[in-house]
Structure formats: C-alpha cells, structure tokens
Image (tube, rainbow, N blue to C red):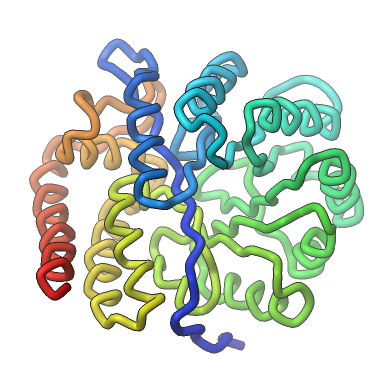
Length: 316
C-alpha cells in the first residue's frame, strides 16, 4: 500500500559529506571541514564516515581523523557518523559498542553500517545485537544498505525491520534499497506502530520520497546542500517550485548514480570542483572513476539547478 502524501511537513535533511582527496591520494582535511560547514550553513545535518566518505576504504585511524576534523569544525553542532566494523577482528557486538562509543566521544550520533557477520545472523540475533548496542548508547540509527552499494549490506524482511524499529533507543533508520515499494512498506508500518521513528530515505533515484513522509540522508545532497534546503523549504510552504528544484536535482541523481553506482563519489568530486568547493576532483585511490567527458554534462546540470534556484529567488 502506498501511504498518503504528507503536504507542508517540515523535512529533516541529513547530508553525507564527500571525503576529498588530492592527486597523491591524501585526504584533504581542510576541505572536508570546509564542506561540513557549508552543509551546516544550509541547515542540513552533516554525516561523515558514510559511503560518500569512502568509509569502507578507510583505515580505522583515518575514520578517527575524520571524526576529529568534524568535531573541531562543528564545535558542538550535531552530526551523524558511520560506525563501520567490517573487516575488523573480534566479536561484532563489542566492535559496534566500541565504534559507537568513539563517535559519541566526539559529539556525534552513530549510524550502524552492516557487516558480513551481522548479515549472517538470524532475525532474533540481529535484533538482540541492535538492542544491546542501543541500550548502552545515547541513541543510535540503524541502516539498511542494498548490495548495489556494498556486498556486506542487507535489506531486511519487514519482521526484522519492525523488531529493530521497536527498540526504544534506536531513533531512526536509513533505508537504501533504491526501491520505492520497500520504503513505502516501511513508512506504512512506521506510521501504524511508532510514528516518532525517523525513516531517512537513501534513495538517490527517488528523492521525492520526502513527499510520503520520509526524511533523508543522501549522498546526492552532498553535491548541492543549498539546493536541497531550498527544495525542502518550498515543500513546507506548499510552493510548487518544489517540483522544479526536485526535478533538476533528480536529473543529477539519475546521471551520477548510474551503474556502477559507487562511482557516484567521483561524480560528486567533479561536481564540487565545478562549484569551487574542491580544488581537485580525484576520488579515493581505490575508488571507481567516471570519465572526464562527464564534466560538461555535470556543468549543464549545475546550470539547470542554479537556474531553478534563481527563479525561486526572483519570485520571492
């Protein structure tokens, strides 16, 4: 069943922040802090050590360095950070406890990336692990991640989703299946059981899921946080220009998130360089690359987005 559209609702927008690199493959921490602040200034919640931040390709020390830069840049402003344990030795429950504790020590809210060990657990064990980690935390977010993003990801059945949603200290969940139907099912179940539970769409191919009651935690919003903020404000006031901005941003999403999907991070770097938010558009040394011929197309899309924003400002 498709839930009803929820007009004029205030949308909570969280944006994954791209981790920038130079041509030598080094993290450019200064530009990471720069783009975190731009995200906050657009009134979106920054999220670091996410897929957009190449967290699966970072060492534990690099993930810690990202937390340090984020905490220093924000000085107490809330942020979200990925708790990533795939590839680490030890009991997964303890690994998640430690990852959450580190994130909270820097002032962030942890979102639990899945891992192969968690993926292999049965429903009861999964829910028990989340309950244990959540109980000892200040509040966590769960994460359903489709295998098109990472092989250790998993989209749960609805019973597992419900079990995790009913854990009091799990405050919300990011759903990244790229399926409207699956997300609509979760919204309907949420509305009937726990209306205060936040569902953040991770569907960069259907960013209008906010119309049906999803919030968002997207990689696409890293390309242009200000345009997302403008779009969201239009929805609150019932301004039909919401659709113009949404269409322009969705055009960007369809192009940037085409197969192979993980290469969208290089698209983001190319786009941010066009916006003068980066000086180098190199991806992580082990990240997938897009061709240079994408850049003129991204320039055209950028002009379309900025044209939609300018039309809005002129109307005001």
